[in-house]
Image (cartoon, rainbow over all chains, first blue to last red; front, side, top):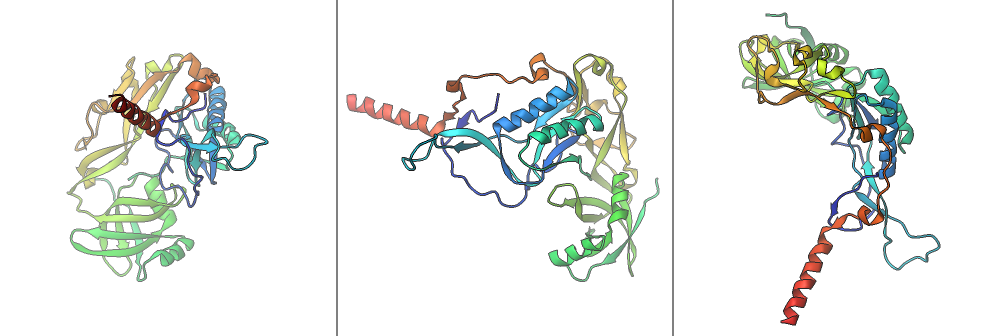
Length: 139
Length: 223
């Protein structure tokens, strides 16, 4: 089931701009390995769900998958063969804003080789280039 | 007392983003030494050398500044680049070996608990480092956590960690270190579930408020 917010303040949003790199949610926080975005994109709720299913089918009840992004941006789309105007269209789907550095998924409790393969499967479902990330140094 | 590794540093005369970037291109990292009410000192250190030391779990270093004296320093903070994992700057705080400091020490998990060997069990580490208060000369490179002591239990807390002498954890002893959860059938299969379109609509807070206002206005007009 693609996720979406339970309560929102406004039904429609402006498109906005995605500038710069991620300054938050850009490191592995919960698992041991992470899938990090290298590009900028709107990742749809369906894509996030497809990634989760791909990972869990591969992991087969091993390890834990954490999803670090949430689709909280409503994207509207006009119906086909509709004339322009008459106001902003209804919400078509929900998306998460992803910048370079955003941690998309994390995996815990599996060896590195399995985590790598699972992340590769998720990466195939993503609209952005990704890389495998590990926990960073802490002092 | 364990040996403190030594690292050589060169003082930086010119500071700022552009000069720091030039240093990084040459394989050096900008750093700063501060504390003990002395003037802060901007230095540069060899990137490879410091990364090897940091990966080995070193917290305290002897920093030998070119043309200056040796200073015992604690690695206080690291700054990371845009992808969040490449070190771009190091903060050193001057310390005495007998001083008490608060540091994060890496946890090395050893063994598999009995409860994690069951089918559909997932062992999750809630924390991978522990904040401890100890003397500078007693900071360990890592803390060994033997998970076999968990047995059939599903939760391992900070209080159950056997800390080396002289170390005191700052966190609550009941806080979890790792836990074992069991995968549910539906989650494991990861199948998509169809939902009604009516349920798919999120609740709009502002619209609900306007409805109430309209309702109140109608009531008043009826009166």
